[in-house]
Image (cartoon, rainbow over the protein chains, first blue to last red):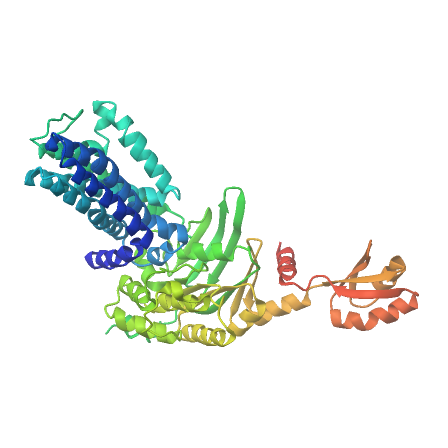
Length: 238
Length: 320
């Protein structure tokens, strides 16, 4: 299974990194770093930096990058008919889903986590904040990628549905109450970042402990992967 | 090196059919793509013949497990084709659609497919399969730069690289030039002679003739005929043909033609007479003398149903 996954990851990585995606998402990352440089001159750098990484990074860059790559790993092949080449090989459906998740996550680390780490370093708040940014964004990439891999298999309009989910659920409904916030990935990433941002003068509504954040994100990932596995088994391949 | 890796080992022929369709139907919403189809396929080359939209590709997808039947059951190598990925070690498919992984090279593509099929010597197997379809394994161009014919051959290489027992090819000769067609037909025949089961779809009768194979005819989602090529060809040639004769007076000519040998029916329409004949060539020889005998002036004689679709329609109507 490990060999299958490695083979698939190698190929999926090459399919995923189109020039358009690299340029568009690379530019987004660069914009966040630029904003961080501006933030470094703010009156209260720790608070401004926290707000920037939380609002622009964890709520924007991380889910958007994960959506683009996550939904494309299996969604693109399903749409253009190339999925059949992978589907009709003696590999477990879990291998296909896991490799897609790993591929999307690795790419997400490069295009979301890395720029956010650079951005947090540029704010000069401290090493703890950089670690917090790295961990929280990586957690977000893993959870969102799993959900969006499944979404890519479920619909051909995954970008529209994914953006709707990010804006409406994660950004609005998921922040409307304690219960609802527990099923929003943003709650986990923000909570984890807060743990590493002692200097910042901010409070987060519906925050959870770092253990709760990790468990919540792991659950979201598991649910996304299970749905993806299920969809691969029942899907009509072109 | 295992038999599969050596790439040349023949599969032991079996008495059991490789594929069994038992009263299989498939519908998509209100559209019935395949209706109550039953047939069996044994090792060797079998052609699935039928006009475009007849349901051939759906049959291919069903037998590879890419979609599930709405009714009936399918067995491939003794197993249902869906839900057992291990079975795909023994199946190779050339899908009809042109899509391949565009950014990678042919060698990378075929090697990846070989590796995913469990071959240890994937690199060598990929090079061998590409050479077999007359492509250069050392070509460093990405697949997006390949012509339709080259992509088709890459797909064939990917389908046979792991030496499967069952090779399923959906319109595999599309986009190939005549020389490549001959080469591929030769390759498919060789695979069949090795004891593998090769199923090829086509909508071109002459193409199927070259496979020299058993034929299953699908039309309007139904099994229209099955047998060896010569049986099917005879069935097709023996059917009544329709010929339109533009002539005046049409009614008198129709009456006279009905009494002529080989004419099984005649009716008058606004353009002339439409007759059903068993032998078009013989009919052409007698039509003018008959017309003369009733003082009819013939302006044109044209066959109405020489296209393959009408042949398939006839086969379906004959069976149902």
